[in-house]
Length: 138
Image 1 (tube, rainbow, N blue to C red):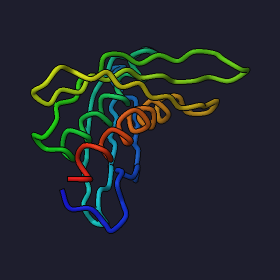
Image 2 (image 1 turned 180 degrees about the vertical axis):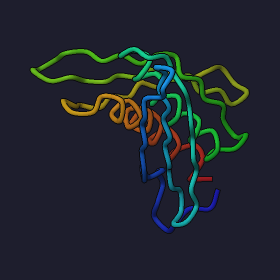
Image 3 (image 1 turned 90 degrees about the horizontal axis):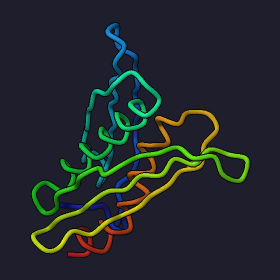
């Protein structure tokens, strides 16, 4: 992947989230590598709070897959909102495979307003340092 000079991480550009007429959710996440190099991920999920968070995290994971192409494989293991320190923290667990034993990554995002957007950001929080060390430095 070509990156901008000095950029070692993906940038979160856009997030869309909508409730569908059938009660399910749809999320869309746009990430940027180098300027103009955009990766779009989408997902649909169940109509529940847990489904809402998972849908957003899956969309971000889908965008990551586009960014790394076939260099790495990501799998969303779980996403959960927990109450801590008088705030809500969204935590995600992701498995990353690259032909060797899987690496488990954990990310989080502190929120009180939009937990679904925070789930997408937590995916980036979990993976950006790892991607900077593995993908962008080669």
